[in-house]
Length: 295
Length: 162
Image (cartoon, rainbow over all chains, first blue to last red; front, side):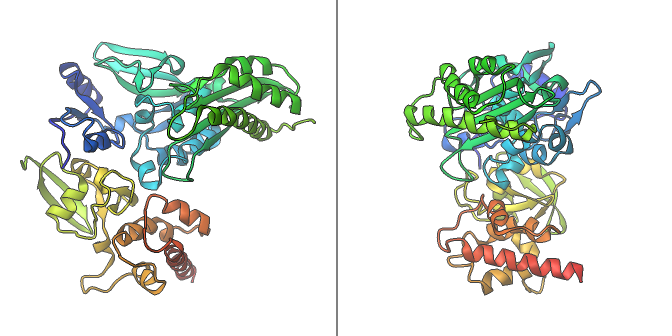
């Protein structure tokens, strides 16, 4: 038996928002693989919950008319990884969420819960950040659109008001088109583990595939929130792909990160991982895009 | 406080349970329905000993609210044997391959392996290990478990293509 106080059961998004407006202290319950465990551990014992897990209108993925990919927040990691739109246009997101937990956790965990939880190790968050995702946030007052870049406010803190709900995650067409990504999760175990460090890189190459048009690098656990590395991204713009460029990218990412020591790994080890994973993931993304690394 | 009813199909039979909304699915199926194959191991979704199939997919019933089961089709280990008590091929393979020692994790492993043995795509040993990564066994060292799943998968594929 779980030690929560009241379970408000919403049968539609409109009803969920009304319940949240009336009970702003209650938490939305999606797949529960974070919240139910915190209740079990006592950290959230006695909370009120608004059950939204049954709301199928918040589930699914589609390619919209404007070419953007819309991911509804209650889509499970398994369903993200298996979805034909993701497999065809954004395979790196499927690869990233496939590194989460084990099969049972990927069946219950939701992509919306992963990012609203606000932890820097969230495997889906790192790739969504690397693709400049845009969030649709709703409340009884209406809808607001927020770049995912502005969503994380601090460790475990996100820009969601007490009456707001994440209703959609959108990847604009310009962001995924002709873009190839690679995700590396470094963890102690191959499954059922949280990232010691996560790195998601994507590139758009010039027509001749000899130089980089656009490079985007995002890290998890390299700072209190998932972050991008603007200095490295800027220096790669228009550059010919060479081994020396990869090394420069590896050095430049260090200027934008701020990892800490934890029981999982020391700050020094994380800094080494950051440099090495940025280089490896960039090389893999370039290969997926059809480019070669000139020595 | 039994304040909510949940109707779902369990092992082929439609059933209605009166539950406390704070119940997990494992509380409901083990406590109310007496399905003792569901083990309360870690109770936080790490060990897989409470694994059941919900609409064909493996879930940890300990971190699944009982109210979410409304309208769902659930399969537990009890649903694999016939009413006369004859066990299924995957259960027999676990016995034959020595994949059972203390037995506590066994129902969870067998339920997690069902999607593998029912798939038409042969899984490599690495893929089998990935599919059972959400289940812990402290006795066997896993090799015999992988053997049992691999053997049953090959047998099922051979039967289907015959």
